[in-house]
Length: 621
Image (tube, rainbow, N blue to C red):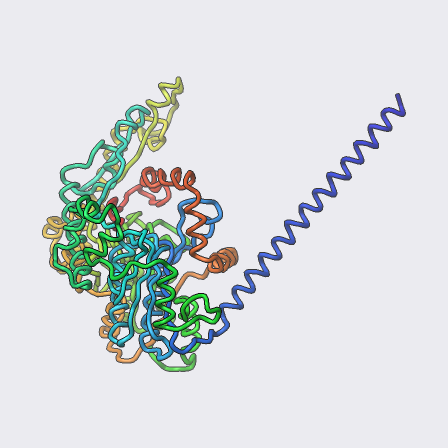
């Protein structure tokens, strides 16, 4: 017996030792991998600082990937790539615009080639801003070529600025028009016995409609049809003008697509060519050969002579480093993108504290003017007001503030904008949505169905009133509704004071109504139509500057964010797009998230009074 016990002990110790060795090896491998990743990132970072040799006669290759944004998120989309989620790779619009503008004056750059297959999407205003840069490039007399296996609506808008558009014979130009569709959940909530308490002001304030209806309200339908039609008119007028097509050519192509395909034996590419949407049908191999003949051979003889836009831009910035001892006056540029929340927020969201610090930093740098670029559909009313107060403090310090609206500057975004001296928008900016709502779901009936009840005592009727497992007391509902009405009245006063109007007049164009930038200018909600560069020029004029230096003020990334951003920058955007394209199940599951996002977002806004200035339709098509 003793010998048997001893033998078992030896066996136990043996396997314990094996386990310890395996654990040690696992930790060793993990640490080695971590060090290799760090080394890889360091190489990436160091490599970015090296100046490129720009070949004489090279084309500037623009191959944007993912979504076009005004401000990169803190992670640059890397977690979405690794986890297979819907988080996209991002391309910053200003980077593309700056690269194009540099190339227009660079004698080494012979042309621009647009390779658009990996552009997932972008709002019309962002596409227009890049398009305007391409038009400026064309004034230099240099050609633009567009190459695509297929062209989506967003991709084709950029391609239409090219002198020559090449489409794969197996490809298509997929034009469908703009739409605004969403899921509605009232019946589902009823079946789940969830009581959704809504408090709002504004007949058109439809952010919360998906949880109170099973269809779009007549007011929302009327509002959406108006601004969608205006944006589509903007799209078609620009494309037909650039392609020298009849004004109704795009609408006719869409309306008659079945007949068009029948006439061309089902070939989308032949239909696009027959309607002069593209210039030539050619495979990628044939296109590369044509570009080699026009531009020249790459060093490896496998492609055409080119330099990618973002490395080119980094090189140009290194070459044009301003003199740090110079006396050139500075204009600050701050980008604010995403949902507005109270407190700190990473890049890609607007935190009242974090954005407030950036605005205060601009004042400390003694800049002569501030341009705030806003791309937001709103969020917390409390946070929006805190940011507006920082803008007022900047103006009181003698620094002019110009607001540049991005794709969307509505609801809380417009609340912030009222703090500027001037407001600029693009014709296709989505703005307005001046309205307020509060929302609070309770699940007491759901719990009762399961046999779960809530009971207790409090020192007042409002004690425990905001628990989701209890019915909402009438007094609490009254408090919430009065808070919404008071905040809406405050919103009207702010707009009226900012725009030289009265609350009564503003109310006529408020009520949650959404407007395009062009319509908003006619209504007096914005001062002028123009892109970011024009807003900067307006700021310089207010500050009485003829010569100035534009400096971007950004929130410093944390060490972990810097590592992730550096790694994300090193991931080839086309490879990232391919990886996500091969995750259909994950993509399908992730596609359900937007439907439930509004209700989940409410808690994330961290508004202390649960009052929101948020726009539901303010996601440009």
